[in-house]
Structure formats: structure tokens, C-alpha cells
Length: 172
Image (cartoon, one colour):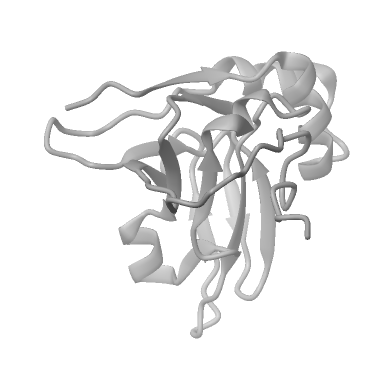
């Protein structure tokens, strides 16, 4: 196995800024307690491919609703690799709980973005039975896989990332 990445927490200041998008009413002490309890992603077993990302707080998402969830996590990834996020199989199977964009792509240069590379998960409860999804703080909500990738022989990409979501769209 190649060791190609390191998970870290974003700074408290960045987490607090992003958390206000999730919960406008949380006090400074509540945000600090959530931040302090954040667990870095980890594999459950030696044979697991995916790193579980844990819910930073209790989540209750009604059927048909979505939430943007700050994880408090960033990933320092070696060049030539990407982190791809997927919903946890059990939540997707039981509730159709999924990432709103189907799979999250975390590029290696995202680590240096203006938001410290803060990984956010926009989750949707696509239940067809009207069931709400409940994920407890500390339970796995998504899983991430590190994968190598290639580029075309004539690739000349030289731009540097400055932002987050959608910031790497090629300019013509």
C-alpha cells in the first residue's frame, strides 16, 4: 500500500466560519465543543478501502431535504492522487441518503484553497418512503477512497487553484 495522504482538521476559525452556514444559532461554545469532538477519518478494518468520515453532530434530515455539512476535515494528498467521497453503503441502501453531487472529488491542490481545503458534504435524503435519516454524532456518514489518476499526453494545465467548489473549471 502506498501512503499518499494525511487527514487534518481545518483551523477552528475556518470551521466556525463554515459552521454558521450549517447552524446560524450555534453559540461559540457549542461550535468549539463540536470542533473538539471531530474525529479524523479512518478505515474500519485492515481490508477496508474507504475511510469513514464521521458526523460532527447529530443529523436529522427529513425525506426530500438536503444539508451542507462541514466535516472539519482537510486532506493533504500527494500529486497524482484524488480523494473521492461516496455515501456509506448502509445509509444509501436503507434510506437513499446520498451526496447531492453523487460523488465528491477532492483534488490534491484543494488543500491549499482559500477555505483551507475544508471538505463539505452536501447530503440529500432521497427517501421514497418519506423516512427521515438520523445519523448520530460520531457515526460514519460518507466514505472516501484515494485513487491514482492519469492525464493525457498533451495536457498543459498550469493554472493554480484559488477557490473551492467549481473553481477548477477549464478556462477557454
